Image (cartoon, rainbow, N blue to C red):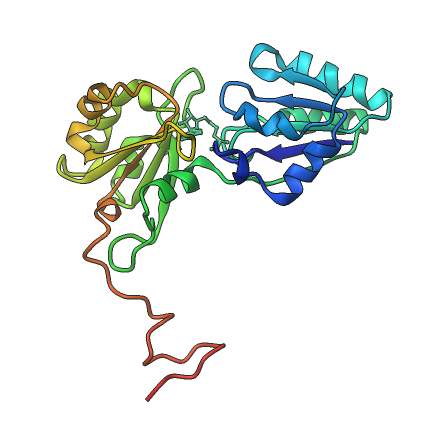
Length: 252
Ligand code: SAH
């Protein structure tokens, strides 16, 4: 059995209880060494085989899985954050399905959640934004034209950019060309939930400069939109005494 597990975005105690149990019970662990905190491996049992997928190809990862499966071992494939975002899990799952190998999937705390926590931020403020666009600039992996940062920028919703910290000059130009004003608040969150986490609040027009000043080149998320200001919002209707909900009558 292969267990895909989200490691969470950094801090070793941000993995789920289920994920940690699977790690403790695993005979083989394949972890994404570029972004998974190695402290997570402290709970792995003695004698378990540990492989760092940062140094492996897909074929090599699958080879380790097939080998473990033949021996009847339990394998954990540990991905950073939650595997559903930029995790390259589908290609692994398809290969396992082709071989008739069973797998399951345990989610994790994505870095876009870790970044909100680092900023004490609510992405969806009433009257400010009710949507979060999760996207990236095109890199080696292309982004479909209809999903360009420029196209999404027209909505002026809260935007979280993954995998784009190395391209900030271009990113900020695209954000502005698409519709965010240069003064729109923005934030850079470096290594959310890690001991060396860093947050920088700036504006769309100063993203590249702010990252440079703070020596941030990778492992960061860019958060854009008026919600970064965390003010000027309407209070919630859910907790408004004048409104009844399914669980609570209105108060006179
Ligand atoms: N599946 C992961 C994302 C993998 S893509 C998740 O759910 O978070 C890798 C990118 O994620 C990095 O380039 C960076 O943009 C972002 N990232 C991952 N961990 C991060 C962290 N702790 N803080 C800030 N950004 C992070």
